[in-house]
Structures are given as C-alpha cells and as structure tokens.
Image (cartoon, rainbow, N blue to C red; front, side):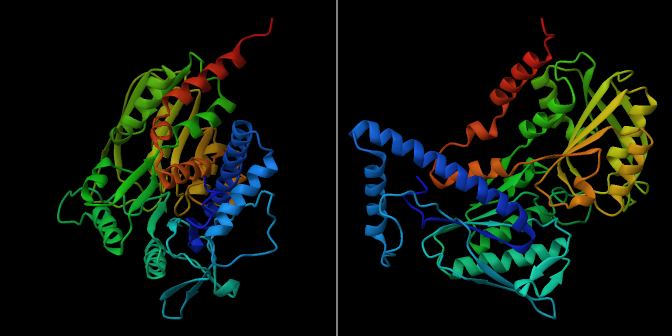
Length: 419
C-alpha cells in the first residue's frame, strides 16, 4: 500500500496545475487511507491481532527503513501520508523560469501536474509576483520542472497533462509541422517515462513516441453522471449528434452505450481562414444527417476553443426543430470571448447546457453560469496514478462500459413511476 511505502510517491504541481493537483492529492490521500484501513482489518482477522497491534507492526517496518527517526510520531496510530512535493517557482524579468524542490525526491516515483490551458494570474516567488502564462510558457515551465526532478534523483517521472498541448497539430495538410509528436519526443528526451492525459485529440499522436507510455483517460462516465442529473437517460426523445466527422467515434460510443440514435453534422470549411472567435469561424456550410425535430440532443466533443464549431452546430440543430441541446466537452478551453457568446446563446434559448470537466481550470466567471455544469475528473486521475504506481491494471478505468451500464440501471430505477 502507499502507506507502507510513503517515501516512494510524490505529486509535484507546476503553478498552472496547482488547483487540479490539490484536488487530486486529496483524492489520493482518501483512497490510500481507505485501502490501508481495509488491509489492517484483513490482517487483524487473519493473524488474530488487534488493529493497534497490526498498525504498530506496519509503523515499525516503516521506521526500520528510515535513516532519521522522528520520536514524535505515534507507534500504534495511523499516520496520514502527504504526497505533495513542496517547490518554489521563480519567473525572472526576462521571462525565464526556475523550479527549486524544497524536499528530497531521491528514488521517488514523481508525478508532475501541469495545466497548460490555465490563463488566470499565477503566483511566483511565494506570491510576490503574479503572471498570466501562455501555453508555451506553461510548456517550458513544465520542462524546467521535469529537469529539476531528474537532477534531484527521482526514480521515475510521469507527466500529467489533462490537456495535451498542440494536439490539433497531429497531421499535415501542407508544409506544416507535426508539433504534437515533437512535443512528446521532447518529453522523452528529458527522461519522462509516462504521460497521463485526457481524451487525446487523435490516437495518431500515440504512434509517434518511441519509449514514452501514454495513458489516455476518458471522461465519458463522469459526463454521463452529470447528464443523468438533468435528463432521463432512458428517454425516447434523447438522440446523439456528432458535431463533426472528427467526433464521430466519441459520439458513437455514447450512442451505443445509451442505445440511442446517432446523427452527424457535416461541415464544409475554408481552411485558408483561422478562427479567432465563435462568430469568425471558417465554417461555410452545414448539413445534418439524422432527425432532431422535437428531440433532446446530446453532442460530445473533446475540446472547446473559441466555440465556433459548437455554436454553429447548435444554431443549425435549433433551426431544424431540436427541443433542447446539451453539449459535453472534455477540455473546455473557452478561448477569447467564448464564455460571453455562449451566455448570449443561452439567453436566446438556443443553448440549454454545456457539460465540461475540471481538467482545465476556470474560476467563477464560468463555473457560476447557469448553463455550465462541471464534471470532476481528478478522482479518475488519482485512481490511475495509484494503479500505475503499484503496477495494477488500468483496464477498468479505460473501459467505462460496465460502470455506464450500472449508471443506466440506477437511472432506470429512478425513472420508474411510483406505485
């Protein structure tokens, strides 16, 4: 258990990922406490010892391996474990970053958390300096932090990037780079052993690494839990619509899991234009395959940038008679004026709800909107880290089929009329 090896795992958060890391650490501490208490109970029953005696033996085993013994720690009581690695981050006047670890990480399994899409003011130099970082700033700060952990003797470094940067640059349409692949190769060169991310934009990215292991988690269950709170998942009026051809596999999964009809919006784009806002998108025409008149529409996509794709899809569905439209995005970036434009669509009764995850940090400006619902995925990441650290299978976390089936059964029971 983590408790019996408390010096072998550590969570190191960059300033951008601190909010997500704190929630993840709290989940991890709760999970490890639950596991060790179960083990203590099992050992107590097997060897006919009291729980305090078992706890005393476990603590003795831990203290025996330590070079510095703390006489203040109780011998027969549970000792809560803290996984957070304290660090000091500096942003110099010329824009350079420095990461200094404030405790040892020698021979530790270190997990570095970074949210590259956090564009809120962040604290440096113990709070005396506030900076708003770009995606590129976040990436280089991550590089500096990885190097600090490697130089300090970490046994293994895993990078946790809920939003993988440059993921949309995964295939060439002309004389352009494959930046998504190059970023992963840089992480490999720095010595990173594994990457944990959420709903990677394309599976092609995984094929570009030599040694880097990629754990691509999915937020489908967490999203459906929120959807079940606002809609009856068994409703005959519920249909699934893919907002474009790129999201068809994702929506096909929801369609097959919920056993609902699947439709598709086909968009023609002018790729000579770059979308900066939802209104200034490069979509020139939209066609719908499927029936949405008087239906409750659920659309899922991996990321929401300026929101132009989704807002145009919503307007097209509303024009075709959709009753309510619910969108779900794993990575809600909301770049530029996207929040205000979605608020306007909600006031105009075009949009009903947007379900996003906390993989990307947002403050009350988004979280307090009536149309926005937050699905937390920090527990998913905490369980993944726990299993990876102890070489356990991730299959049950990767394949959400069974837990979604259980969710549907619970939802069905709630939907039954009272006798």
